Structures are given as structure tokens and as C-alpha cells.
Length: 64
Image (tube, rainbow, N blue to C red; front, top):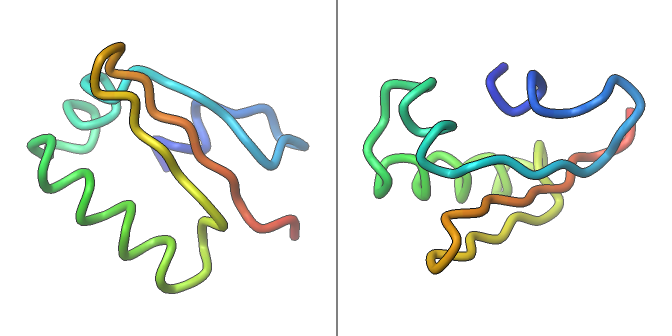
């Protein structure tokens, strides 16, 4: 739900501050990475990237 809060209703991709997303989810940075990997493995996300230098998280979702 946190990821969808950072996207428009019709968007299939979005970006957010990774630290903010982790805190909103009650996760550490490593736990967030694990959660994103699981979302990608199960097909909820088609891709995600983390720019550790800028702490930027970007993701793409499956169009429904």
C-alpha cells in the first residue's frame, strides 16, 4: 500500500525516497530490499531499482 500511495492511479511506474518507504513500512533497508524482491518474484512488480547514492527507489507494476 505504501508503494501505491506514491503513484497515480493509472501509473505503472513511480519513484520515492527509499528511506521514507522503508520507514512507512516499518522495515529496515535490507528488509525493504527483501520485500521488493519478493514482490518482483511473485509478479506484483515487473521491475525495481534502488539508487543507493541518492536513496531513490523506482518501481514498475503490472498493468491491471
